[in-house]
Image 1 (tube, rainbow, N blue to C red):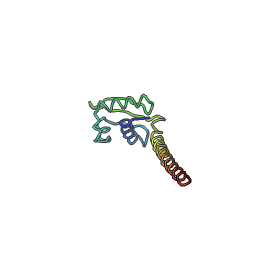
Image 2: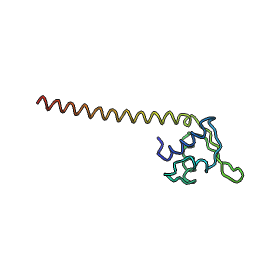
Image 3: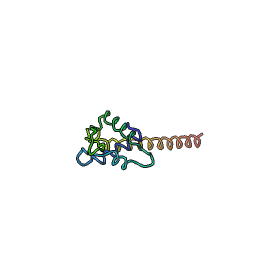
Image 4: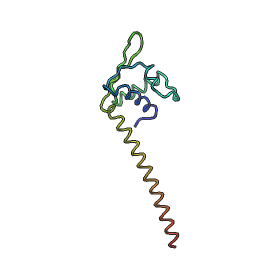
Length: 118
């Protein structure tokens, strides 16, 4: 399970690589796609990219182009399944909330019914 910062970076990577599964991106382009409220730095993004690569979401290669650092990112199976897993986690959370609400309603009704009987 990814934390919020890793989710933000993975969303950006997935958006960049969604067509072909591989992309060439500069750190500036990647930073531009991330939420401005969280104030990512280039060092933080590089660290998160390395961690995601270790978790086998994608393969990360760093290179230089005209003196500018570039990342070559190619998605792996975990990277392709990222959106599906993200949606599944949201559904699971909604089901848990639904069960909690249903349990509370049933407990209330049972308590109310017992008060009426006794």
